[in-house]
Length: 357
Ligand code: AQP
Image 1 (cartoon, rainbow, N blue to C red):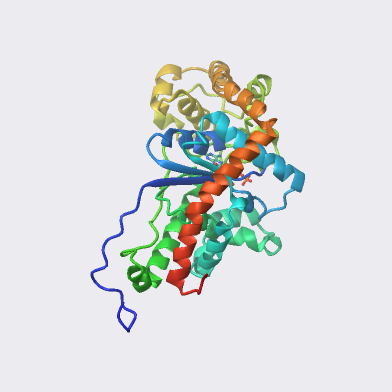
Image 2 (cartoon, rainbow, N blue to C red):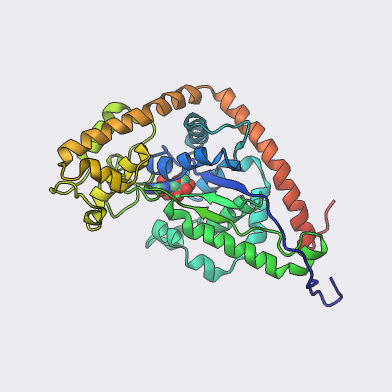
């Protein structure tokens, strides 16, 4: 860097190691949307990337959480990760609050992100509705913490459901602005032309946005007051069959072509769920069920759900009761995550200009 603070024009292009990061909030029972939109993707990516999967408990407290229930939910989400097939030895599984660097980097990002960017976040608007004055400051700043979660590991890929796309895009904006604002310092500390990668959302497959079983225009969500709106990963076979039987549909048979689903959100949702669970496309499912009434399709879907979910549910129940094992996985994962996060924070402090030990 010269005296004017200009980055050398020759700063080499930074090459980032490909790495996956994603998280799930411990805010109640995991549902089919979390499972198909996120957790199954986490499992699939393990063969191709180094992965870091986090139970994001700091995000959970942006809305009130009963403390004993939060503790239970942290262990339950961890059990779900393991039961679904995430390998905590090859990869990293931990809970966010055990690695203080997430909050530390989030503060730096609070000073990089612009208010105008935050004001565009649709999830904040949806979650607060007319009661915005009463929302926590944490809920407003949530996307900045999410950017820190990803970037404290300098992760390049983020598997999420469709609803989180805007937040990953904000993480890219924050990374880009940090790289621009501190360009000369980044180069002079030997990091090339960028310190943070611009993380890419991975949103693929037929179930990136699983909708409520009661209303095809609303996403399936943990916070929906109606338990009938979602399949929880803890539901037994009878509950699954009942919820699918009662799922809102229309009176027509299933169409033969995907185009016929365009104006039928509830039918589209059930076909999408079937497709994701069976590893098929919507078109394949309609080849098999086109022309069938829901009285035929719904029992087939319920059977498929039970076949796919019950081994995971059983394993989850077993693991959940083994509190010392779950806590040891989280402790080990947190220690390994912290080594990476601390290294990033050391560099961030140097780049920003803080004096450190
Ligand atoms: N309905 C969904 N379809 C597909 N993917 C979904 N995800 C959530 N809902 C759906 C994805 O699951 C991951 C973890 O989500 P989260 O727990 O961190 O937060 P969320 O998106 O706020 O989930 P909920 O269930 O809607 O919680 P509440 O009701 O508390 O807000 C993310 O990758 C998310 O995209």
